[in-house]
Amino acid sequence: MSASAQEPMTSKDLIALPQPPADHTLAYGGQPQQYGELRLPAGGGDHAVAIVIHGGCWQAPYGLDQVRALCAALTAAGVATWSLEYRRLGEPGGGWPGTLEDVARGADHVRVLARQYALDLDRVVAVGHSAGGHLALWLAARERLPAGTALRGESPLRLRGVVSLAGIADLRDAAERPLCGDAPIELLGGRPDQVPDRMRIASPVESLPFGVPQTLVFGALDGIVPPEHGRLHLEAAKRAGDTATLRILEGCGHFELVNPASRAWPDVRDAVLSSAAVR
Image 1 (cartoon, rainbow, N blue to C red):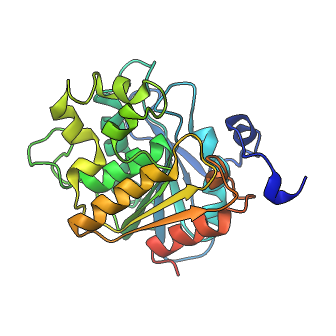
Image 2: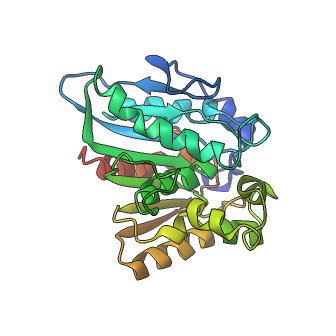
């Protein structure tokens, strides 16, 4: 079978990839899932940082093992990676608001990490896949939440950019299609029209413009989060005045985007390096 005729990767294929160990596994909170894996590039100087957020429909069976290969490859390319685990649906505290609380807390913890490790706080980007793409975009939107909103916090970590890989940007559209089955509704704790206040806080598209450049990457063969979902966010971001780009990669499905051995890798790598001003 030719490379162009290969079937798209599955989640099982992704988990079967090598699992390169992290340099450090560090807690950012007191709950078992509140930790991250830090990988540091070789060489001196302060490193740009990618906060990496795994996907899996926000659900408990899926963890950061999905993105270890990606993180190791990004670190080898010159970017420090801080890969977050977080409470997910099916776990105590997962869903609303715990999942968002954890991602916010884990991102802000980069300031703490920078006291010990050579990290450049002016070059921090968020990179997320699928449901993690939602969370990465949400981190970019978080500063736009009204002051006093608990999930915003007093001083959200400022991002230089966000790279969303097959990311779920609009929870209303995700619930209507549906994407990830009932998971968007479970994340919110109700249908979007039943919990409009939560929708406004949790769905990134509701907070446009972010004032943060957004790169959206999709596989043309993605049957889990289709490129059309990305186009909707792209159009909304541009209407709001944000800088946003959409890349649709031919011959790629959903999981190729986090596989550094796939044809998607050069585009994904370059998007992250460009966003982090590494090149």
